[in-house]
Length: 209
Image 1 (tube, rainbow, N blue to C red):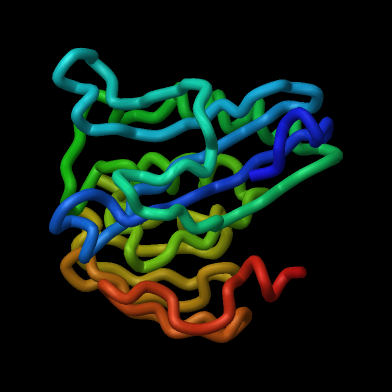
Image 2: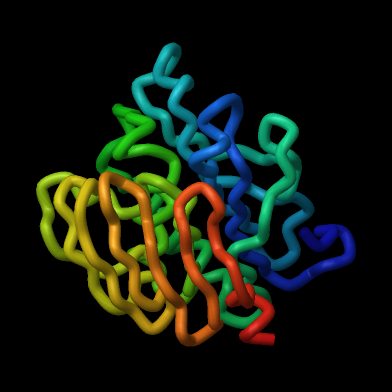
């Protein structure tokens, strides 16, 4: 993440890192970091399940280092937006986070979990163009909805409780979800998407630069 003291422009970044323990073999935890223009620190938005032990909501909004390790695991940058118009995106991210409908619950598989939260914001703010990797288990959880936009906010997906579905968009490519595990291909930033392993191929961030 750019140093806020040396970066006056607005910044939004989306990160993902392998989660703790045995769960890290299967999935990642994702979060969103924002810095409005002229701000001296980052604010992060994420869902942390164990917060429900002491609070009625697992949604956590706080100032912290945006790219610090998650239980010792280095984060991967999934989206990066800066400059003009980003302050308006930050306002919409904040509203989407506060309007998240499943803040009072958390289920590792198939959701709702931290990746369900990030996907919710991605759909609400499609300008982020975030391509959540196949290891972001829970991103396809729609509860009682059957059809929605893809987590990037583009294209569409059909999903049965995050356990069985298909997704097609100009950002994610084509994905098939079987029991919460994602198999896919991205023809736009050529890559295969596989459970456990993640994305094999060109990073969408590298392809867009």
